[in-house]
Each structure stands twice: as structure tokens, then as C-alpha cells.
Image 1 (cartoon, rainbow, N blue to C red):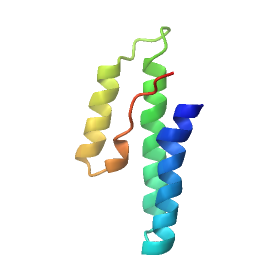
Image 2 (image 1 turned 180 degrees about the vertical axis):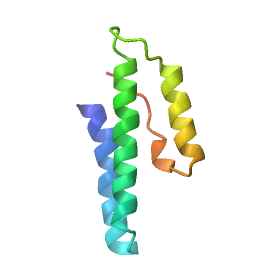
Image 3 (image 1 turned 90 degrees about the horizontal axis):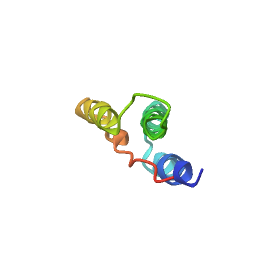
Image 4 (image 1 turned 90 degrees about the vertical axis):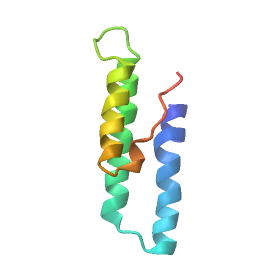
Length: 80
């Protein structure tokens, strides 16, 4: 749960503050949040021994998202 707060919610809070100051579009904030949640969840799934998803596959997925100009895909793998 701690990694969820650090990797997903804290960047969201800082971006909401930036949106209020810099007038960033809320759609962009929502897209970033959903991207972070998707990448974080994939890393969590890859860490479970009950599936075939590898961390390298998630890294490739995150790199593909970053290639589509989604910097929010730079989520670190959970350490739990």
C-alpha cells in the first residue's frame, strides 16, 4: 500500500497542485493517473509467482507508453 501512495498518489497530488497553478487540463491529469495505475498494477502482477507476466514485459509496455509521449509511465516497480 505504501508503494501505491508513493508511486501513484503522490505524483497525482503534485500534478493537481500544478493544475491549479498552471491551468493544466484535467483530462491530462486523468490520463497520467490511469497510466500510472496501469503500469503499477502490471508490476504488482509481474511480482506474483502465480502468473507468467515478467518484469521485462512490463518494462517494454512502459517504454512503449513513454514512446507515445506519456511520461507518467515512468513508474518504478513496487518493492513490496
